[in-house]
Structures are given as structure tokens and as C-alpha cells.
Image (cartoon, rainbow, N blue to C red; front, side, top):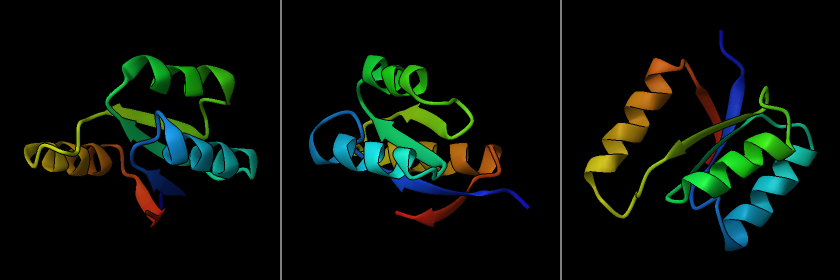
Length: 82
């Protein structure tokens, strides 16, 4: 069974970024989504890559919801919280 992740959308700025840091610092594995690839990569560099998975998607576009769903399925990610 895969470990559970916290799914945080809009993780590259504002409240999403702040919430991401809180969960990461508390030791939760997180799956971060956002449009800004560079900022997502910054999270991976600042924190252990063991607990940070990222996918750059614009969830304002309905077709990208399927992209996120397929990523979760392909990487066997179990979402604890979202």
C-alpha cells in the first residue's frame, strides 16, 4: 500500500504556499500542484524530495483535472487530505 499524501492545489503562491510549508514541516508527504514550475521545484529543493511530489498543472482548465488524476494513478498516490 502506498503512503498517503496531502494534495495541495495552488501551492506556488499565497495561502497554498503557506499551507504547503506547514504540512511539509509537520512531516506529511505532499503532492503540490500549481502553474509555476520553478516555484514547485523550489519546494523540492528546500525540502526532502521524499515528502514532496509536484506536478505543474493549471486546474482552471477542465482537461487538466484528468492530467492530475492520471498522475496520481500512475504514481500510486493515495490522497489523505485535499
